[in-house]
Image (cartoon, rainbow, N blue to C red; front, side, top):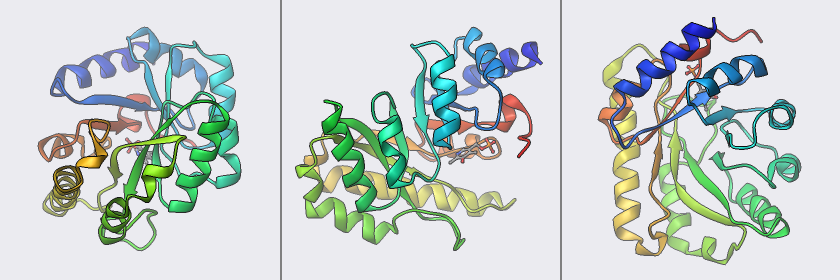
Length: 224
Ligand SMILES: *Cc1c(COP(=O)(O)O)cnc(C)c1O
């Protein structure tokens, strides 16, 4: 198990283009497995449940960068606000405001990505591209002193059709490029394109991703 995790991390890293960061998605897996990945040099881990993240954060080395990748409830922001390195899954303006409030309280700007809903499914969370662009253009976010908007995150449609997945990522990428070039106020912070998971990260890297979130390929299937 240990060897397998270490080898997989090494092999994914050797495969990824140099500008692409790997988030090892450790949700539902025990702290022991994270330690093994840590021994392979992995420092960025993604979790999607606040309580589970809290437990792991207390247990594991301080130089781990924890990323929150799941749907985040406003009333739980306070628990992770002191230490979270990046929240990928900001899906409403209200949540962004709440994160900012806790960022200010903790004397920091919490790095955030806006989650775009581009998949062909009803169930996924996120801003529609139109909604997201309008919000970015509104400049309202400039008032928020406890966050920084560092880029966007999305998930492709859950399908075997690679063409469809590629199209989803392409739309996300053109959204990102358009926002970056037409809204210069976003500045240098606005640089992260978080797309690609175990099954589609190679396509994602070909379609502009610079941060992939990989779970089951590294840690095996999750037991819920
Ligand atoms: C669970 C999860 C992943 C990892 O999925 P795998 O298919 O196991 O790689 C990536 N992103 C998000 C948002 C997730 O919830």
